[in-house]
Image 1: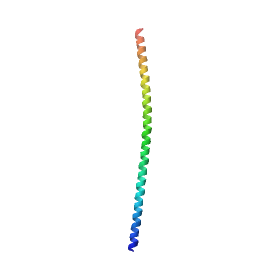
Image 2: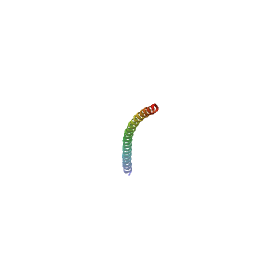
Image 3: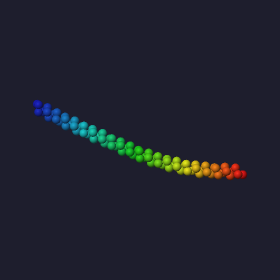
Image 4: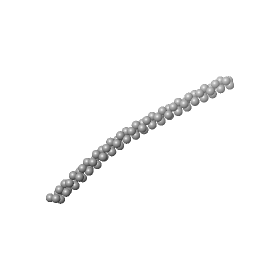
Length: 80
């Protein structure tokens, strides 16, 4: 009887240890997956930010050209 009880406890202990290991592995995999997803989102946002900065630089250049043209035309009108 005592031996069966010990064996039962050992079996339960083994199952509990396996369940804990499975849980830890599962949590680690989930954490790794979330980390990869986060890194992918960061990379996508960096690309989007770079594109927005490039567009802004282009618009600023266009604005400078328009301001120069406006100043030139204003000067021409003042000379007439």
